[in-house]
Length: 263
Image 1 (cartoon, helix red, strand yellow):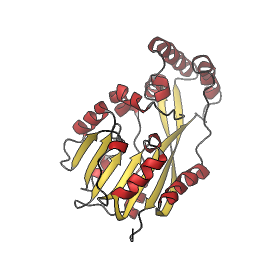
Image 2 (tube, rainbow, N blue to C red):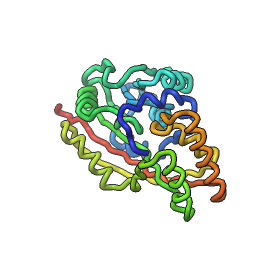
Image 3 (cartoon, one colour):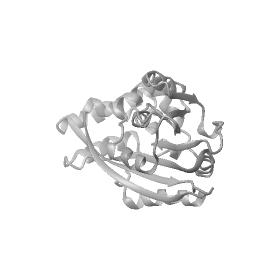
Image 4 (cartoon, helix red, strand yellow):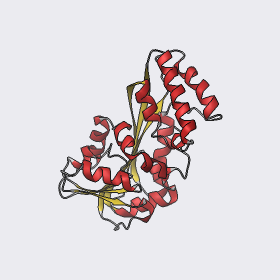
């Protein structure tokens, strides 16, 4: 889904649905992160934009001290309950831009499907300052793409979108070139040892599950409630006419960058 700046507040209004419906991330991604940075109970980690905690537990399981910075108070509270069994976890409710971080204090800063909400010229320098020399920044995101397995499904849904969200753009499938370009941003801010990685998966939804997922996207949340109800009902009906199941093709990108040891 496209990013519309200024709508990051919307996720907090659908906090429980967001936690329930948004996907986690593949184990290979964490294996790659942990190849770049060793974490244990002595390590300090900050997660930028925890959302519903979809990306958090594999990092917590290393025993590190993890601080989540989350703009949405409802999302932060969900995560406090979700990770209550981890004494090494805490959530701070504020924008990352306002978070009073200490310089040279973190072994890892990571952000999952959230860092695009932060202005580049603020986010990257702040992460750089927070990291200890040799520390790692991991930025990753999930990019869903249309159902490629059912002829006619995408066209049927686009007919509905043309009525309720005219002019909305359907993004191309996320590519290695896009991941590489995103990775190169870190070089402008002093990071080294920069790399990018792609992972792929599919997710199946019933028609009802799919419209619940749509209800977690910012540009859908802001549609007037009654109009949104009609919109989602027509999406659900279209999927049911096509067999009742839709498959989403995900591409997950991971960018890794390191603060130089001599910084």
